[in-house]
Image 1 (tube, rainbow, N blue to C red):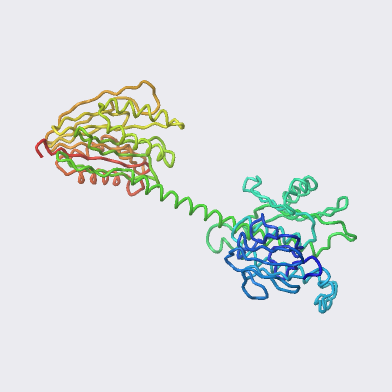
Image 2: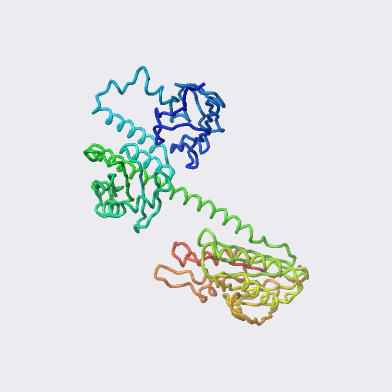
Length: 528
């Protein structure tokens, strides 16, 4: 049985409170929702539970990753006795005592130390603990917790506030001690805090019943360049500041206390800067992973060429960014006709890719219906206008090729459709109506041609004719036609490869600024 209410006394708290009374149930962990919140990376978010009931004290590990230890031995659940050493993970340790036992300890090392040295040793130990904790912490919120709790301990403060600002001076984050004291403390000392941030040096101030310490968090930036250039500080950036309030004492704030708080602020600024960089790198890696997954999904939406006896097909799409807004559609309809299309959603990036996926799915569904080509474009137009909050539009060249060589063409504001005649020559079929997704009551004229065996059909997006050289001169539709004129007898794959190579040569090795997509189909003949 315990003679009095238990007390946890820090031996190595690493950012946790120095004294923790245990009354009822005490939840321990890294999460701030716990009764004993420990800003230490090796402590789990829900680490352990300590229960004081009917004169008995018991600790239970909650499946923590670092383990809970009593007197150096790992435990799952164990009763605690006065004098036991309780460790959470490998680094955070408390001694379990009572106020009476702590006061009457047979050997108190602090009694052997002169009074003027006690405070210095405690401050040094706290700084060492904080340095270890900051070295282990990488999550920004945890770094802020460690810094603020340490500043409160070092200064003897009863209230504290740590504020971070972004590059524009706007508040990015804030931590208060005790939690919820942000507004109250800012109302008391907001003017002092702003003055310190503007002047970039510490100040103290006495007010009624309290004394305040305000210090900025500064980090030195070295200039980019060679080692010689980086041998001096290019600029000093302010990350935010610390504001501490403690009870008014006779001779005011000692110079040593202010120096220790400033030393902590210097280390804290470096750790906060590192945590910010870590967060940015982690967020960037997460976005890159998600975009890579999006590109994989988008590529899977593009269809494989169908096996049709009367045509040979080649299709290719190369997005300029991770995801693109171009699409191609290849489908043999229930009536036996071959349906082909190339489209281009306005804009670039994720928003264009989302609308591309919508259009791709709608084309696949509409091509299963027994309706003429003009009705397909009208239905697609209605669907895009209903599902297009960003007022984006789609250009689309769509064709249907029948087994007998009959070719029907509808072009909604897209690049011209090219027909390569087997006997030589390139025939051009321009747009037959407006783009899709913006204009109500639009209509599209249907052009009809007849293909002979060996003739080829080429659809492409504007990324090809708009390929620019170093002088910003585009390949243009004339360049596309000239390239195709020498390819009339080539296979679909050879035509596509040669056209893309022409565009790449014109860019003189530079990356394409827009998505590049093409579909080439060669008609084999009705009896093939």
